[in-house]
Image (tube, rainbow, N blue to C red; front, side, top):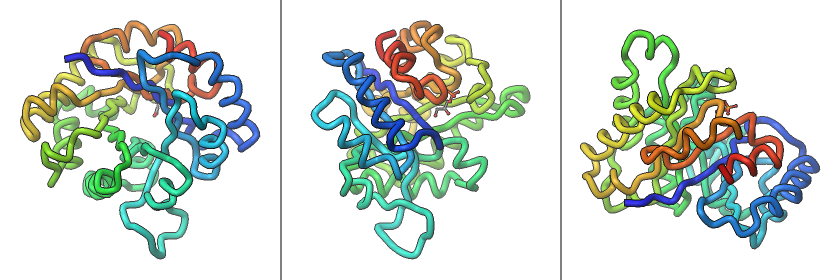
Length: 250
Ligand code: 13P
């Protein structure tokens, strides 16, 4: 089965509205007509209206880096799915390792967010990945399976189609260290097998699994070009229009 790749930019806590608008204005002409892959930008919530307006009518979709699972309420500092949808956002990251590491997001919270996204028609990109100590202890497979199991509690094959998974080895994020294509493929196979165990072979064959962790123009092809790797989630190298466009057009 051929899966359409998704190449996504996670801007993390970077850019002002003016900088975000300048990026989109420079980026869109560079990827105009590019239909081989889906392209997504994940800016900070305060940038969403600017970026969505600037990208309107283009081949680039926009999502949030995080959402709350509740429809609304007294949750200072959070963004609801309704708010995301009201400004035109269509996607969201869930459970990025920085959310897990610095904001105490657990597999249980990830699961609640995944349910909320699916119930509300938002495409979820669920992030999983091992830390260096896990890898060195030979526990990568166990960690990935546990994160996938936790994320997918109560999810059935009938509602699973929109789910995207991003494999982001934590030791490769922002470090310049990249998983080798062999390491990434091995991890993706573990994730796909776990999805097959929980949701069946059809869902597993269709689910897109992205690689993230120091993806840049120079290594994009060797990673995304792998049959098992269905796109990329890019941090640092997505902040400049020419660099991210080069990754999209790997
Ligand atoms: P870098 O590409 O900067 O390593 O970040 C990866 C990442 O965390 C994307 O979500």
